[in-house]
Image 1 (cartoon, one colour):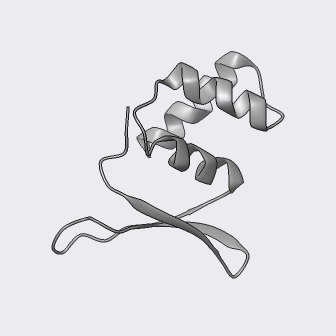
Image 2 (cartoon, helix red, strand yellow):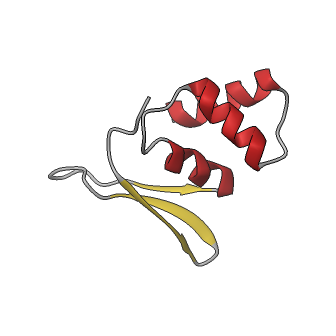
Length: 79
């Protein structure tokens, strides 16, 4: 999986935000997220599988169980 659009990720007033930068005419999107969400968005800049995302999160952060983490990542991606 890979993001359909390109996002610029930055911290603004203590909050991590992702701003869609190649959305086309009339579309605009800003996503407020936490450090983990920003980490996932950065991973999705390249084609990557759910299993690879989960493995990288486990390397970077203290993570939940495998099943819970997969469920959390799926919910984030779906939203």
